[in-house]
Each structure stands twice: as structure tokens, then as C-alpha cells.
Length: 193
Image 1 (cartoon, rainbow, N blue to C red):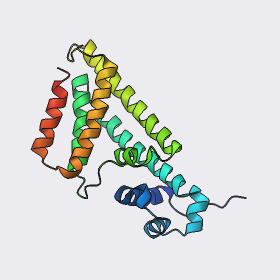
Image 2: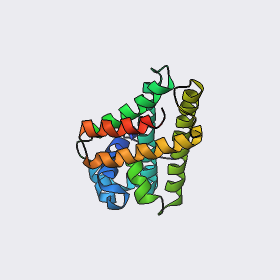
Image 3: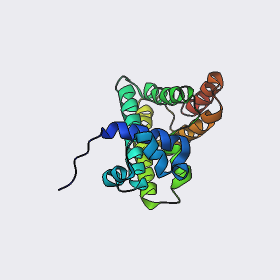
Image 4: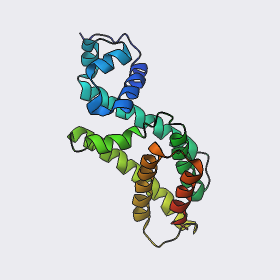
């Protein structure tokens, strides 16, 4: 009979997220996870299987949190222009509120882990596909509304916007100048006009 967990799984995932976000996957030890979560090693192994197991759950937990934030913002928009602006406003707020200069866990993971583990690579690829599909839908809507140009296909613009978001998140690790970051966003969005 499997043991019942006697801890708050979401709280443990929050605590583990902080560790992985601060140190990266390779820089995080099992002792770091024990210290952060106050669980013993056997509880971590029994509940998550391995360091990689808890890391994959952390990625899903982090992704879900960001997806909710974006979905909530998009639910309040009425046009494609507003939708794209909301996404970039969320990214800008994430950067400006990132006082520890950790960046985006998913972007960091992409550069650290996708060439090291096929499971992590598959997760990151699925995340990218979801983001690209969302962006393509928004761009397509904007092109139909005639507020975005048709110089490129919706899928090409979606890839451009996705790459721009990742670049912005990386730039924002060191650059917290709101005026400069807004200038970058304005340049990105002007491409669609």
C-alpha cells in the first residue's frame, strides 16, 4: 500500500522552484532540496522519484503559473493588438519584479538542460509549441482584423515573437531599465504594423 503524503505538495514545489530557479538544475543538490523543503531524502525520492522527477514537476508547476497569468490577461482583451501588448506587459512586469535577476526558469532550462535530457527537451518543445500556437492565433486574428501586416505568415510572425520574448527575458536578467525595455518591446511590436 503506497504511503500517503503528509506534506503540501504545492508548497514543496514552490520551495523547490526557488532552489532550481536560483541555482539551475546542475547546481542544485539533493541536500539543497532537503534544506529548502524540510523533507528528508527518502520522502523526496518516494514522492518524486529522483532529482529529475522533482525538476520536471517544478517545470510543470512554473509553466502552469505563467499560463494562468497569461490566460487571465488575455481574457480581458478584445483585439489582437491588445492581446500581444498584454503578453509583453506580463513579460516586462516579470522582468521588473525579478529583483534577484534569476530570469525565466523555462528559458534558463532551455539553455541548460535541453541537450542533457530527452525528457526535459520534450517538455520544453511542448511548451514552445503551445506558445507558438497561441501567438499564431493572435497574429492570424490581427491580420484578419487588418491591424497586423501580411508581410510574413502568421506562423513566421509567431516564431519571431516567441524568439523576441525569449530574448527580452534574457536581456532583462541584467537590464532593469524600464524605459529601455519598453523601447525594445515597441520595436518588436512595430514589426507587425
